[in-house]
Amino acid sequence: MRLTRYFLPTLKETPTEAQIVSHRLMLRAGMIRQSSAGIYSWLPLGFNVLKKIEAIVREEQNAAGAQEMLMPTIQPADLWRESGRYDDYGKEMLRITDRHERDMLYGPTNEEQITEIFRAHVRSYKDLPKLLYHIQWKFRDEVRPRFGVMRGREFLMKDAYSFDLDYEGAKRSYNRMFVSYLRTYARMGLRAIPMAAETGPIGGDLSHEFIILAETGESQVYCHKSYLDYDALAEEIDYEGDLQPIVDHWTAQYAAADEKHDPANCPVAKDDLVEARGIEVGHIFYFGDKYSKPMGAEVTTADDTAVPFEMGSYGIGVSRLVGAIIEASHDDDGIIWPDAVAPFTVGLLNLRVSDDACTAACDDLYDKLRAAGVDVLYDDRDEGAGAKFADMDLIGLPWQLVVGPRGVKAGTVELKRRASGEREELSAEAALAQVIG
Ligand code: ATP
Ligand code: MG
Image (cartoon, rainbow, N blue to C red; front, top):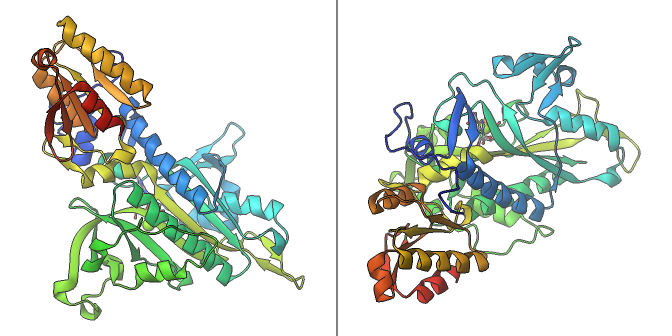
């Protein structure tokens, strides 16, 4: 992509309305534009990252045996009256009346909707287990939308739902999601720690929030320091095998958010306890027959009795992750994208477009990179070198390939790794080999 054709409205000034670094950087890098409080348009650079994150989430959901579907954003209120949540949900739910005076709502989540689908189509234990998910926009009329996409009112969520015959089955489904979450965040360069969470009236131990540590996190969290060395990608996962040992490994040590933490009874020695701020990037939850029972969603067992489905739900904050990754990976100059979610792999900087030799060298590199299938953003604007360096650092692409008239004469280009700041003068061929390799 040539920058002269790309829509990238970067800002030089720091927007004063943004309180945290990820919000500031997303605005400055031209990734989003606020429409109203907590509601954003995603501009090309931001949308590109959102899609990369979504793709990783999708791959790991599919690998874990979940099937993708798509449910609507607008739901009928009657479904929520059946579960009892229409009144309980309160002001966070956006309620709508259609032209026939029917009560509708913009879905904050989809438990009722998926339960209705299963109630209509699944009758026998032979059809279970099933694990379905969708990646769809949600609306929650948060009291205090803030921190940009981190706490929006409209936001993109992956929500999965499991249906099983009994508790044992539900636990297996839960474990699948638990393990796939570990992999999902690790692939984005994040260290997410599963922390015991409130399970509400159902009780049990099957609810975990996946939290990444960051100074600007909204919750106070506590965990054993050993979690800082855990590696979620160390082993191959067989989702058909027994996942309990992996879940046990990741839950053996203490990790809890504020609501669950009791300083008087914390089992971890002070020196081994990490106290930090955390961002919740996912939440998984077993809730049994909480929705299936009131909604009359039943399945017949082998001995022909009807029982309500055992269910769980599993959320990932896809749009929140864009901000969360920036909170975890930036410096004073801008964003530092982990390779896996970077909007482009390389930024190619032409330091003097008026110099024919320089532009010819850049055009050649641009064609070769594209031919090799590398995503490249080519800064071909007629701007000073300083502005180009600043913008490239701000948008945080993993590699910068810098071409100037002096280097072209000497037969060299400069290759910079954004994360480490390391620079190297080398031939164009050698630079290409590194980036493509
Ligand atoms: P929180 O405690 O942050 O309000 P929640 O417990 O209400 O979140 P869930 O219902 O568990 O959230 O939703 C699943 C995931 O969706 C969360 O882990 C989070 O990553 C994301 N999420 C929830 N609310 C928002 C929001 N207002 N803006 C962006 N992402 C959100
Ligand atoms: Mg939660």
